[in-house]
Length: 257
Image (tube, rainbow, N blue to C red; front, side, top):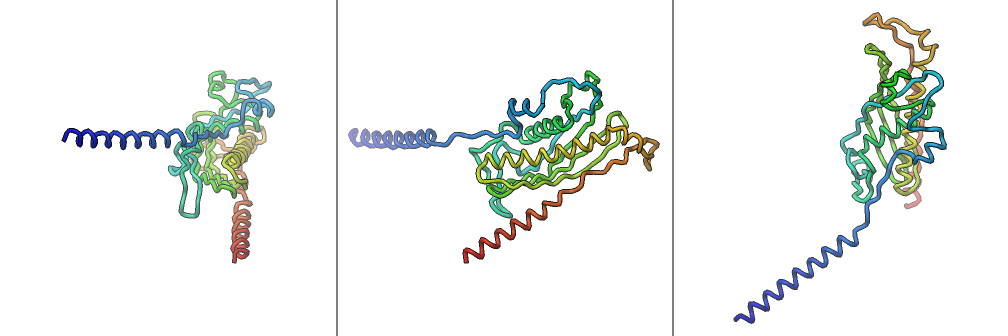
């Protein structure tokens, strides 16, 4: 009887050992995570004239991007890609190097700073070397279509310097075609954010220009003067890209038939 108990106990031990070996093998064979960033490398930033700390020979406008909001669907460490009109995939092994809102903020800050040729840092406020234009960004859409396109749709608000500074709220919708691969997908988002940063910087430059000061008009609700500055023209290539993608899809279906 004792022999039967020992045999059963030995069988249980062997089963547990086998299960542990399988689990360990699965852990060892799982692919490593890859991390992506929307900001350029330091050499690339230096090559384009971007510097973390710099001085400007004459007073310049400084953009302070205070906050960036992103849709809940993509507010996670993993990359989220579209697999259809109503389905998304969360890529466990493809991840952002930092929270997506921080990645977007850094990308916009660097690109806008490059456009202005100035400095985007909160330290400038302490130095009082430039006029601080405060910006908030609310990303409405951050879509990733692998091997096809990326879409970034953002509402951004610029507040002029001073406690009673004027506010200007605009919307940018950018579509960028991308090749296959996740690196191409991330690079497409970086290009889209660069386009938005270019529009943002152009708006701030106009607000800060002497011409804007000379065209200031009274506000309806107060005696504060507001510059007559228009938002950038909406991107007209969005619909064109969608039509081209639809035509391409229809052509593929026709060939398949």
